[in-house]
Length: 219
Image 1 (cartoon, rainbow, N blue to C red):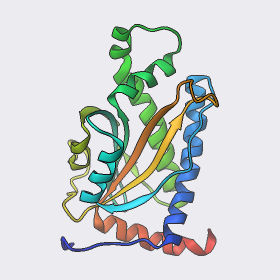
Image 2: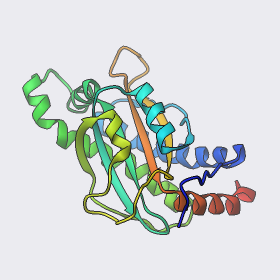
Image 3: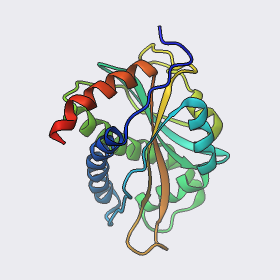
């Protein structure tokens, strides 16, 4: 049983190794997203933080306030967790317009929002988690992505509805792994900022730390 006071720290080398892993996934996601929007997609170098849940909520709240649209992808394997793709509500409709192109009515955008964001979430989250699992030589089982709209402060308190029965309690550790912008080189054209958040419990992070330690000599 993990105690509530347990804090797992990653060294700068371990964090750099994680950044490299997710950079690969983000690059693949950019290529896939570019095909979807038929335009160039730019993704920034991932910013990675490893935080206890309360600190992660505070950090996320500084970036995203109010209602958000989110896609959650749950997974299980050597460890269990959830990955979230998050957009402020005002930006989610912009993303749908980018995907569909052309002049589309607000009513039509709203109707297509869930389907379009699920498609984007599936591409981005699977690219990140897939490359992560491949490089770490893990077998992960993925559940169907879920679409949700809720207040930003509630995002990191989600419990699985139909996936693995792990508990993410106060000792859980949150990875906020990337803050990115999609769009063409022209910053005025379809520049949309979103966030990917990876939720793992303390035991999972300890396993991850061990795996990274085994990999470091080859990175």
